[in-house]
Length: 238
Image (tube, rainbow, N blue to C red):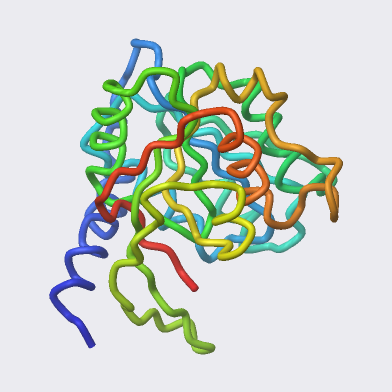
């Protein structure tokens, strides 16, 4: 329906998919950003999310995939053939613990000063990390760097329809987050500040399984700076 925009968004993922069997790069430098990808029965989406990381123009990342007790065969099949790259780490849990606990486990393992939360059914624009890390470099004592996203509608037959760019609020406060519950993606967190506030709260309603993103942003916006990058860096599904 919007062929040019759709092709520009999807082509880098297709190219990354065709390169998955090639010799992976050997990276010895410590990562600058940890990408946290929690999955629970998301097998049909995972290849796209992982390919989008492999397609990044910025290579100083580590990807931690945490399987939070998935029970479907499609997820199990994909996790058995995750692309070979020494920057990708896979963790499997027998039981489902919920998004907040899963994210906290990745936080405790993170080797980088920044942590980007990538939902399993989203993917990153090829230059997303490059832009986010560039902007983060000029921000002192900033807890979160976030940006706009491209919104896609998923129909019942799995067809994706491009909806356009969804602009995030230029400033986030507990009031804005509670009243509007905006979809904030991508969202990249300062690891040291996350640890100061004890990460994600799993003592909330539904044990931190729902709206953990809104809750975390509300908590951080009370005491820290949240910085908005006015560019669309993540295609996300509605």
